[in-house]
Length: 342
Image 1 (cartoon, rainbow, N blue to C red):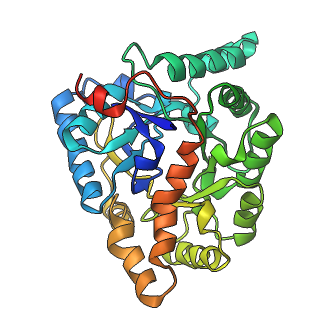
Image 2 (cartoon, rainbow, N blue to C red; image 1 turned 135 degrees about the vertical axis):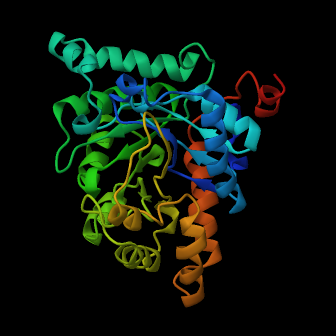
């Protein structure tokens, strides 16, 4: 029997149901920890905010969400567990680190200079996957990886290599961030060259580019491709949703639905003080909600015949089952229902 770890315990991969592959319940850019005097933390308040997002998601029939928040960006697995238990939504969390430009704290950069960082990153990933995160017993279901715009830096390559090493030993899924949709083919090639299983790799944020040749270059490696930033448009070079839709139609028309995931990459609760968005930016981000695909994009695609319900079922239900069904080959000590009763 094949299982995947969630924040409330193992779940059978074929029981994940309708899944969003990339949403953040709680996220903060590194450095938010220094602003906690004014951007304080109340567990119950944050839980309630997370539950509002969970309710929007569940209303669309979604049963599982992958939350790939990196370790240094405010990952809080006990809070995710509380949201999952109260909502009934499966949440799969991550171990991993963000790209160098927005994630690299001096911690591993210092250790990189000492020559010990890559081995220590491997040890961290392996310990969290096999023993649990920070003494909670909660285990990640993915490793989050990320690269910079038009480059995979030496710093980032340490995490990629360590992740592949751990995947070989545990079968964990690798899920990536591409900055503005760049380096997707290079990520896939590098991971596979290092020995990663392409059937356990998701190259993320590829809807950041409208160049379909880049999508096809990723797909030819046999990995999964995520178009996972719907509703986030008009900023940081992001394409419009109309442009994303054109690419999706072309990929579906070419029969690639068995390698695609769709999601939003929403940040539903920010750590630190809530960002104050100027009105023009608010207007651009008004559709960046975790139910946007189901409310606005998919109905139009169905109406015009650009997508079938079978294709939607493949992208939201069958692909997650297949991806995570390859991740764990042995039955864990405790089942999901047993964990829920603890």
